[in-house]
Length: 243
Image 1: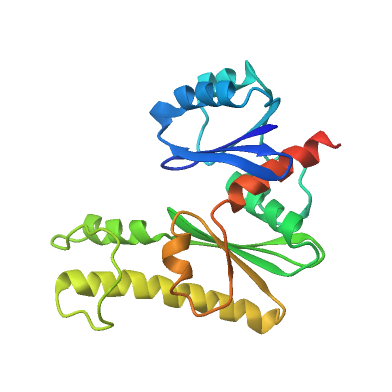
Image 2: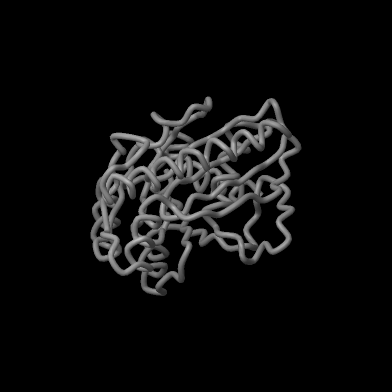
């Protein structure tokens, strides 16, 4: 069994896998991390290996706590990947994006695939049918857009995500909801359309924290999954252990 840990900008995602099957998953605050891991050790005593990914600096005591109990792979840019990385600045590429591409290689082999991860940021990552990662794009996520309107203006309020009632907002709040939500939807649909014009056989994966909200509202045909990042990390661990 494998313990899979993804330390994000806001929360830490944790999964337990038996081969490629996910048995357990949770999203925790950094302050709860050690207690959750200790409970997982008791509940799943057959875990032998762990993999850690982080988009920020990992505290040494966090890694040490995991290494005490499991054979641990901390993913960096030197880790072996199941694809050819053609990104021109690989040391600046987020580990989370590498994991998403790995999941696409595993689950959609030999297919032109666009992976859209809608979280704090919205990232777009593309791998072709030759299993070459070409790159993608990074845009502000939904809540980041709400927050930016509040942070960089004098009077606009900070709002929580809400589906706009009308395209034309007739109050400031409704105008913000329309601008943020409709803007994100048009952006994602537009990016998919651009890729489809080049790769008509394109497979599109949508994942991330806002996957459920967005998947019901996008007009394009997509595969929506909330576990894609954890599955990719688990596959990278298996890939490195097989070498």
